[in-house]
Length: 199
Image 1 (tube, rainbow, N blue to C red):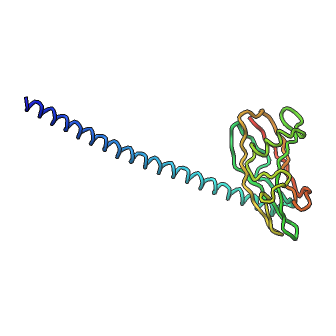
Image 2 (image 1 turned 90 degrees about the vertical axis):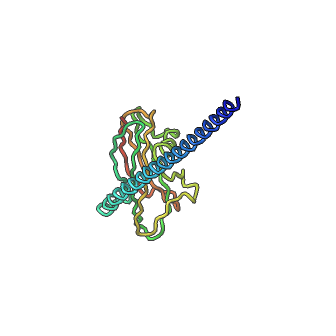
Image 3 (image 1 turned 120 degrees about the vertical axis):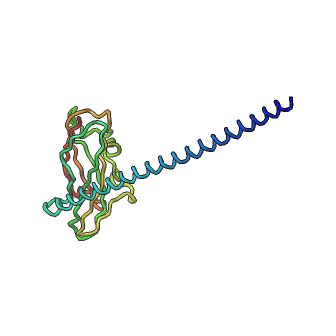
């Protein structure tokens, strides 16, 4: 009787020990896999950031050439764009300050023509264009002085902007005016037209 009870206790302890060892092995494997996964994700996002920076450097070089080779005060990296709904792409604009004093300015995208017709008076779509379609430092009417772009006299500036086409956007051609306004006078400093075709 004692031996059978002793064997049961001994088997019970062995089973507990085996379960404990298995639990420790599982925890160690889980921690290792978690560490490897986090390292992989960090490297992936690090590479995306490097690619994004490298891409904008190329855009910036192109904008620099465009400003030097033209008499324009404002250039956009690509004025004719074709994108799918739900797509996203990095662009940029370049501004040349031809004045003798610092230029504080704000930028704005205004719809001129839409696939459904005239849309220049559509305030809701204009707001959507500046807050959802284009990702930049939007400052309506230059009201927030902390959000103004600053450009020294006789200098150039290059600004990143992402274009994100909403999934529910109407397909077709959009004519969009991009303007920058001098904060001192609230007058338009420069503008350029963009042709965005949504597929």
